[in-house]
Length: 344
Image (cartoon, rainbow, N blue to C red; front, side):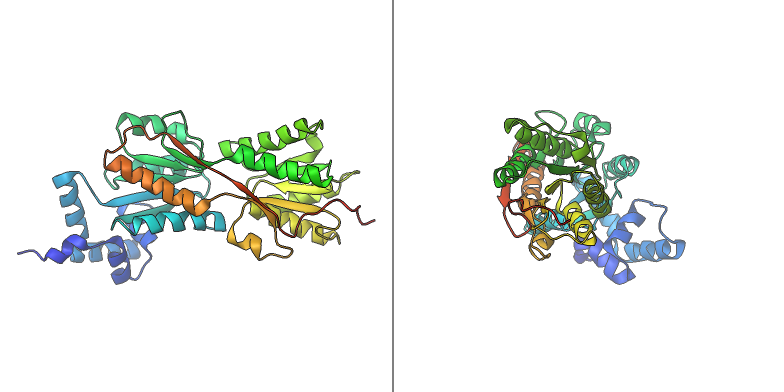
């Protein structure tokens, strides 16, 4: 008689016995080429010893379920991703479902390949955080009725399952706050322009300027990719202008921290000489010096909400869940103040 405990074998069990990470086990299962042959052989042997493959296939054949959720993220290097994953993990922890995590390193082709592979029976559903090219595969997933939810994305249509935040309103509120302080030259660093959240934040910034009868000037807009070096380069470019801005608003906190480095390297003070504002309210934003004024996205709540939405789809409680949009909130800290002139 087969050992009943085998049915409870998880990727974590395989990883522990093989002496590798859960991600490595996921890559072996997915035939990813970026695994050393010796490691692949060891993991496959452990999977065979524990009966992991046989049981996963048996579950799939019996009920079409793997009890695994796939999570695809652009990277693992920021508090932004960490907070969303925290929410996902907390919610999944209540269900007993396992999680496979893949990072795309912001590469659209990897994202599409991972989705295609995971949707071939490896997982029961997908959570995609800040996807770059969902239009490439959403139609195929929808046609197959494969469960998925997009996170921090506006979706690809009214009925596309997605969880996001009020990006336009958040950017509008932050820009208006700076305008009310007396700033009239406000530099803005965008996120990746192929992402809807970036477009919304730029549009919110421009709308606030327009409502205060100010033009959005090309010289005060810098294109970034949500990375800290972009903030440093954008901040440096603004400070080299003949008439630099008195405030810089970056589309995420990581870039705002890059801006702060650029300001300090010029011998200027924050906020006495220039105010800096970010977006996301990642944990690090409260502990940098000076503490960062930012727009709070409820990141953990977004992760939890997306997971709850996916679970509802899996249980067939809701066929058309649509989009969930959570509110943003301006968090005023020490990095912003009324303009007091610039150091000479």
